[in-house]
Image (tube, rainbow, N blue to C red):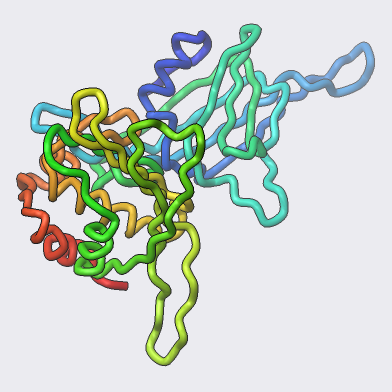
Length: 300
């Protein structure tokens, strides 16, 4: 499939169609310059620069039977490039995309592929070509950094409840309470950071963990009983990623409610895998949640 991107409306479609390549990876990058010979001056002059990025990304698509996983490999060709930076600084890795940023200005397109602005292209137009294949696993989780849960009824769980159930699930954590700021939302009940416990291989003293998951818990908000928001401090860290998913699964299995991840709104069963593996999710009582996750997330 091929799509030409030139106007602001077409650019908005691109970002919506690809979900801004969230959690994707630039697997290949090409720079091609065209030169013409000027007979009057006897010099070769630049006649155009084209930059092509191959991007692989996963996402969940809603179909008649619910969400299903999809992997896309996209070829984004940016023609008429006049300003660009495609060269990584020493020690940097710009291949991982958090969320691509783009805009139109003066009839030109501007793309930023990494949060530090080290990989960017300003061009006249772009062409998107891509191939879609059935995905594996749970693509709505790939590259995730934020997740919000809203419960219509019930009581807000405590930090101790989270710690106890994560420990039963084989994902032990430590809690670092956050200091409430003067500008905090008036419904905020507590916040802090859950950090994976140190990994202790046999015969070692253990290594301290970094990163973790920021947890913010709110009381009644806009008609709901409570809201819990999660944000991964360093999603590239494997331990933090496992904790993030285990925590989201624990909350979704233990309470009825709705989940928000990126621009996807889904109920708890959809989040837990209904429509992805063909089996409806089984919602357990709070005391059973740890055992359910233990089977999904073995201890490190």
